[in-house]
Length: 262
Image 1 (cartoon, rainbow, N blue to C red):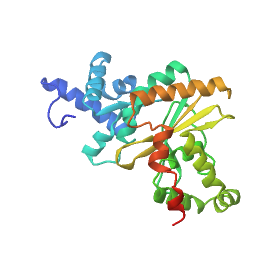
Image 2 (image 1 turned 135 degrees about the horizontal axis):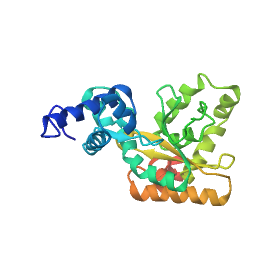
Image 3 (image 1 turned 45 degrees about the vertical axis):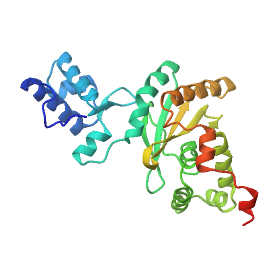
């Protein structure tokens, strides 16, 4: 990633154009080619060259929904601002985008906020889902299955502060923990009534997100189709997409009988 204070283009006018385009995206948020043209007044070909140059240099990336350009986590780090999405999620997006478009499925990527509310980082939905509950969303289960035990407990406790009575009961009786452990053995959350498959995404340094793929219908064929897409992503990003075996080994190791008796 080059220093933006040094010209990316030896031509001074070219550098000025690039800086104008980057400034427009940084100031006004995700932007399509047409939006960047409108903000900068540059012709289509020149504006496209600026956008793709900034993308190649690591300053811009593309949004899942519509391919709009947005500043990267690395750019925000350089500028001293919070990133729109973690760098490890940006690694996944270029592999995910062509898959969901070809397969014609919906996709959501989510994080858990510090207050244990869900935050949708990126989505293909033009009308995002309404706010999802901590204890009812498959996105939560996918994230929790790869959280360290202490972090998992603190997130659940934080969510209990505003939980409904039935959710409190599920936690205090152990139903929620048992359901989570069962989900972790499979390494995925299949939700038949939504026709969705949700899996965890693990980044370096303990970063955790969840990816939900939603097909059309709740049949076994839909489930197999979505599992096939996940396998393609695992092959492309093996460090980010843990298998069920990896999840069990890292986060849900089976206690030996001798350990349990101590």
